[in-house]
Length: 273
Length: 328
Image (cartoon, rainbow over all chains, first blue to last red; front, side, top):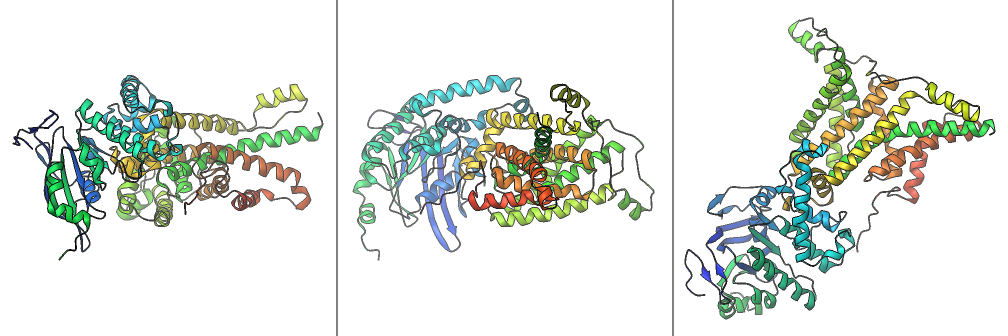
């Protein structure tokens, strides 16, 4: 990594990465007596694709849930856009501009693809309850405006043919894509992807990698993603945090992480002493 | 046309209208069940409470008069004014929204992520509480409710059918009004849920809580919203049933008639609540007409429940409900 400083750095392919967008300071998360995360600190910079990797049970999903407000850590601080974030409900975090997808896909199965993606824009709709109820005034224009944005995202992710299909009927790979679309519809500052390629075949994985890179490139969205498969992630991410047994064992560019002895041990399963 | 057939037609028509009244109650159940998976035992009492409050406002009754008099030795009974029906209805709707906020604040909020059976028990408690509160606020005597809805046999229908068939149908005016109101209610609920952002948020919460949170929907707000809507639907049911048979405790028992409707229509479907109500209404009237005389009559008391039982055996998810298939 060259010329890393508080203002950011330039990647090997010439993308400019900005200052710190989100910073996790000494996060510890416990469930009863079991520590899921122990004293982990790292930052996510503006415009970056940041991966969190590690073997099963390393605490990656817990970390993502802390960032998105689903878990509240016992110790440590979460800083976003230069402000310390107090304990927040997940919906409040979402309104700050942090969107996410889920490992097991959490879509609204009964609704069409279009409606699902429209829910991503709920927080941006300003008209009040009464206006909405009687469908008058700003409510009308607003719906059309948000529809246009959503149609752009649908084009971008190449899911036009299934716009009106109820999500419950879609195959797994497409569901993952619709979930990404819904997260994008919120025009997030930070996009969190929980195992975006889990359970996919090689071709689907390649498609998803391409979409992630395109999203980052086109919209300048900062992305933090979790994977336990090293291969794909190393290719697309700028910096990688490696977790094992709830602790951070490595942090750096993919090349640096690959050479890290602790990381190699964790993945090859060297006995802990 | 033979007299017997015409009479059967009249019975069917009357059944349809009675069915609409059942549907009105069932609708409130479906709304809450869809959004939060709670079977709201208090729905019938909500209708009673709404009707009591409406009568109280109309007649200018002092709320908690008995309690106040007993505690302070005063002699309050009425404010001495009579509110127009429209004003009283709007005020009652406001009370129902306040009630929804209180229910969320003091009951639901503390039971997040609990098993459905726990929430069900909580609504039983709520039912008894509201029943007592209604008595305490407005007194336990039987009241008549009159918001100016037409009542009695419709002469228009009678003369028109007489002209066509040579046989006048007896249809209650109130039933015709109820049908129109129910239709408007269903249309507006459908439009609200399909085309507004709050409707979309509501459907989202009904579908998946976690996903709803992740797109920035506040569950608490949605619960207040859905209980408010259910409260207002209960108000409409309360007005119709209260006008028909007086405002008294037995009004809350109409909820029991809504149960077979839900079994038939499915707990999660608004059209199901309507169709289920119509089938029950027509079914019990026709059964009484055709089979009643053979087995000694009074079949209307149990027909709906037997029909519901048959549905539970052969189609447990109801006509429109979601079939639950567990993946193994």
